[in-house]
Amino acid sequence: MELLLDKYELLQIGEIALVPSSGGRFEVTVDGELVFSKLAEKRFPEDGELLELVGARIGAA
Image (cartoon, rainbow, N blue to C red; front, side, top):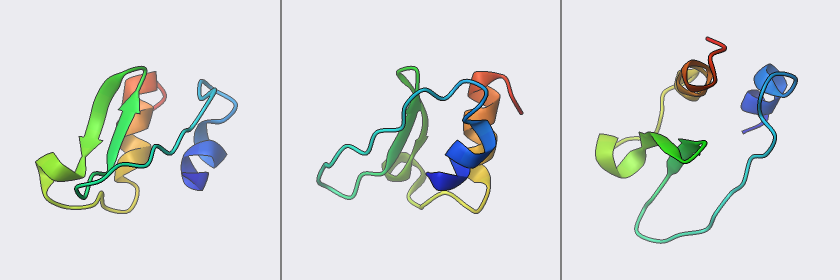
């Protein structure tokens, strides 16, 4: 999450929230749109993958 703030904080990220859940979830949403789901992908994101996915969603990639 720190990498996301470092790269995009001055552009369009107003908030990053960690929401506890159960069942092995790790999901990233931007403006309510799911951009990554560990359950769907059956893996954690690769290095830099979240930066690319978030950047593409906010138009900064």
